[in-house]
Amino acid sequence: MSEKKAKTFTCQVRVQRTTVEYGYVNIALTPDIVSGDNNVNAKKIVNAALVLANQPKMVWYPEDQKIEIHPEQQPQADDEESFDVDGEEI
Image (tube, rainbow, N blue to C red; front, side, top):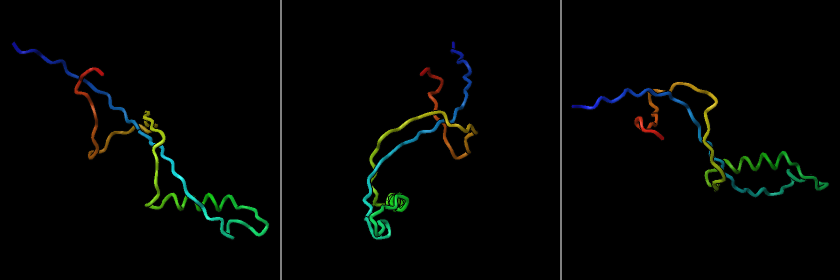
């Protein structure tokens, strides 16, 4: 006698994983960043740091990772996959 398998229903939830990394950049204190009266232009330092951080040779170190429910729920695209455990309890 064959055993009847109960039909399994699913609910799909879109989740997101955010990985935070950090790195260091050194900004040269050139005359366009430091004025004649030795005042440092913080905005120019931040802008230069962002330019350097976008370079392909930038070294990044993992800091944190969190997984949470994605704030925008939408159906998956045809070319995306979905993970499940085939009806097993987690």
